[in-house]
Length: 112
Length: 114
View 1 (cartoon, one colour):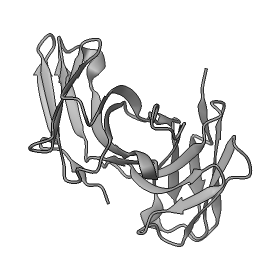
View 2 (view 1 turned 45 degrees about the horizontal axis):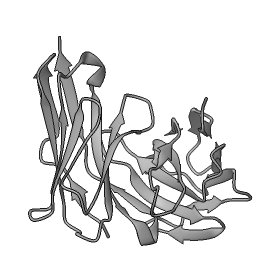
View 3 (view 1 turned 180 degrees about the vertical axis):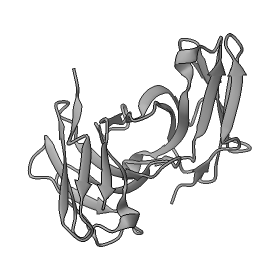
View 4 (view 1 turned 90 degrees about the horizontal axis):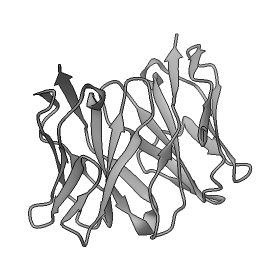
């Protein structure tokens, strides 16, 4: 099945700095990738997605980069705020099977 | 307005005593998923329904079953909970179309086994 994993388990940044969270995947059959944010005791919330035929997608304060050559995905958060503190997961999606496979997560700590 | 609702938020059950977790959705999505999430780990897909078609993951123990009586509701049954089944259980839905595959998650049910 799909295997999606992260490089860094914990990331601490200063408020106002930019954050970069990385994710590696092994199965190039994924059609779609999604970044989710999960706050303590809550379900994952959608942040941003990117289709496998794209290299970059920007949202509000967030940018996702996809490098299919090295099977690498990253989430960039600009001007990180205390409210961004959470665990971030990437997920690979395979259309035909309607499946979402999650990576191991990175905990982001934003220091005031 | 909650779109994927899980009840209860917290469930305590006894070792070996069957327990059912419920999920309902107001999105009219085709696909409903159940994930198990243990502390500091990623959600792990247990199974999903596309409409009434059940799709089990190969490594999901037989102890876990699911029912989807209609589009809106899906249940997770744990026939004989063990201590290792203590976790957060997440329900999610998606349209199941190539044009829109975002999964919407409920708040989860935290299961404690005593």
